Image (cartoon, helix red, strand yellow):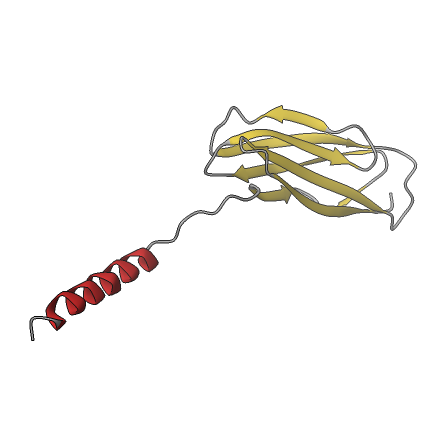
Length: 127
């Protein structure tokens, strides 16, 4: 009977440690979580698009960019905060006609170098 006692206690200890390891969710490295809220879903051409940008990452946000159509991106420093939250006003270029989709791209990089992107669009409406 004494032969089984050490084996049983080792198995029981292993089962307890396995159960404890499975109880907590561990964050895995990955790109920042992004959200964009647009004030309007349609614009004129030219126009100004406004909204809110949000990027979250447990490691901290290094930098963010917003691109409207083919214009050069607007950038901001994330200041290594875990949450970046900002409102924006960006120009929608002229030359679009009724029904065109104007692309909106939000990109963020965390301090580990992971990059996340979020794409959406607004539709050009008539006068």
